[in-house]
Image (tube, rainbow, N blue to C red; front, side, top):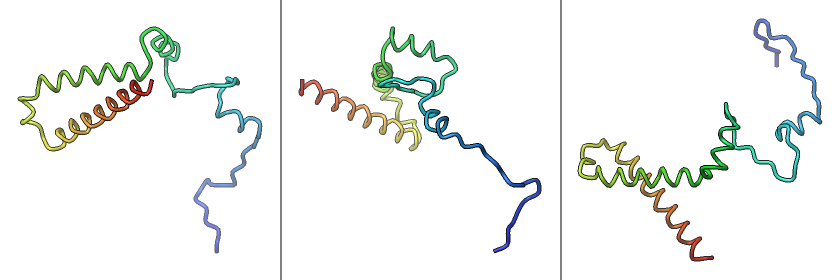
Length: 110
């Protein structure tokens, strides 16, 4: 088969450093357990919030509880929603019910 090249697409060279490639996934930390929760423009703030306010699970739980209150208060007006909006609320309710079940199961297993 003939070789096809676009203009300015000469051979590509890349230095391969196995040590760098092996450790770049771990970042600059080397320890028994390192957890990377993603990129953040302000990791110091995220760390402080996690330490002083609550875990991501706790934060999401409180947001879910607040959304449940709002949904219940707006229930009479939910008839004005589109099909997609109703599906989004239904999916949220199902997710919250699954979370509540997991929490209940966890409390019973203690």
